[in-house]
Length: 340
Image (tube, helix red, strand yellow):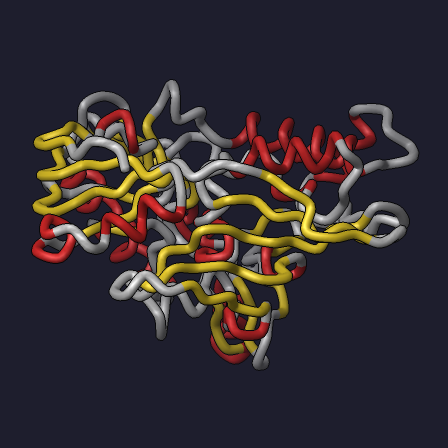
């Protein structure tokens, strides 16, 4: 197990670039590291937070506990047939780099999830999704370690209870398990290509692609994301700050009468999903800046840190945005980012 550090700045470890400090900080590079860690007095006597890429967290204050930096790496093939491959990635792998590995090897199924920040371990927890594809469509199993006794457990797809940006790891089993690896089922041929969501089709045409492949779809998604979303290396952000809300059809139809251009997409349980970015934009937040924080000029879902803002300032901005949307549309926005 690596050395325990104290009073460490978390600025390099979160994409918002918030300069909060951790009382204790340790890196784990194997599953055994984690199992040894949970037997230590520091772990048992302090609250702890597992940090992957830091792309889905907002620190609003110093962390008076133990930050566990997940750096468990490795990609391996569990088994395969002529048609599919079951590929395992340890949780500390960079998600986008893992997607690129799969695309370059012609393993299909996650090309639409290119350039999503974070680590592989966070992907099933959040049930990440983009451009018509969700993580739940490819997960075969999730391996995890009990955070109290160190025992291993494998979760099937069904046992993960995936929902929209949700899983059992954010609900019933929140804070109970450390996700150590994820195994996906991907296609080796006859790929199912999803090009009808968002601007993928138009982007492929612009790129003069007439016969899409998983590589060209990945390229298109990367192009779209780079054109719409700020690079955290240049401007602190955590991607989409809010989830797209789902509302009853009756509510949607009432809003449609008042706002004819309101977009909506049928969802589960007779609900309709409304883009949060559109709602925020209608409240005139898009591109608005308040001192060192603001709402991105290209994508209203993204809150940004323009300099050395405190986490509290970003949180205050998010609350003001939520209040505006509630007042104008009677819709409650839910944060996608984990606020600490």
